[in-house]
Length: 302
Image (cartoon, rainbow, N blue to C red):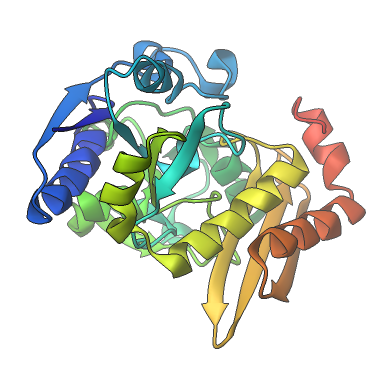
């Protein structure tokens, strides 16, 4: 029996069941254990107040360490760039669309929103990049699962919401998407759209069982993205976007570091064929442009 640990949100359970179905298709018996994390328990406060490091993973990793589960399924963007000793990412399945999406009842495009319109997003990364384009909008802290955010939108609490395309795709809610932001306008979070299967490093049996789920192209891209994020000294709730794509036989990585008020967005890109070196090269370019000063201003100095 392969025991999967998962958060209890609708999206997290979809992800856990997606992996469970693949494992069952390979002849494995699978069970899912729901684990409530710090991030789930503190829905009424902002990410900045909670402190983002491990907020969606700590309790799940404790269950792994205590051998109550065999593997955890995470949204990769929620996973710290440096895992605690004893854990490793055993598989990274093929990624889905990593872009951010505009969701609105009345407006088809971001440019259509009237001045002063309220846009719901809990992500400082999204807020900062969007403010650079539309400083005339009001950006509202917006937490809760996908259904909760869509309900608040339908009730008119805000005029638009920005969500990950991947989550809407996985939940079959793409009809809500009005626009997918180009990565040169809103650079996605490192690892967005990808799943990570985390195991105990010494659990060779589980590593072998999930090996077939690993996608080499996705692993390269997210490894480069996480290398850049780590070199910048950032986590999942800082104004840093990183996005790596394959272009013929090489890879292109783009990055953005933004002041929270949107008055300055640093952007850089690099090309290469070694994931860790590529991510480090991008980070060095951004640091050379002044990224450290921006990150220090939001408490994420290296």
